[in-house]
Image (cartoon, rainbow, N blue to C red; front, top):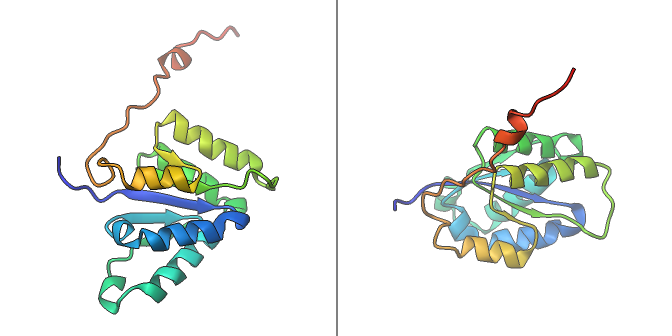
Length: 157
C-alpha cells in the first residue's frame, strides 16, 4: 500500500481542549504529514501551539483549516465534509460531564461518523490507537453502512 495524506478532523469541547492540544503536540511529527481540519477555537489553539513548537522549515508543512466554532455551526460543517467523503478520521475529545448548548449538533456529528464508518476517537487512548495503527499512513477506504433498506422503504401517503 502507498502512503496517503489523510484529512483529520480535530475537535474538543472547552474542558478537553488542553488534553487535545497536548495530544497533538505529542504527535505533531505524524500529524504534519496530513491535512488537519478543526472547529474554530480548537483549531486556533492547535495552530498556535504547533507554530510555537515547529522549526521554521516545518511550518510550511502545517496545513490546518479552521471551520466555525462548534456551537456556531462548526460541527455541522465537519459533518458535511464527512458526508462529502473529505474527512478520513476524527479525533473528538467531547466532554461527557458537561451539557453543551449544541448537544444536538454533537450527536449529529457522531451519528454521521458512524453512518459513514469514519474512524473516531473520543478519548486519548483511542486516539493513540488510531495514530499508531498501520493503517494511519496507508490508503484505506471505509465501507459505509448499508442504507439500502432505508432508501428503498415504502412510504404510504
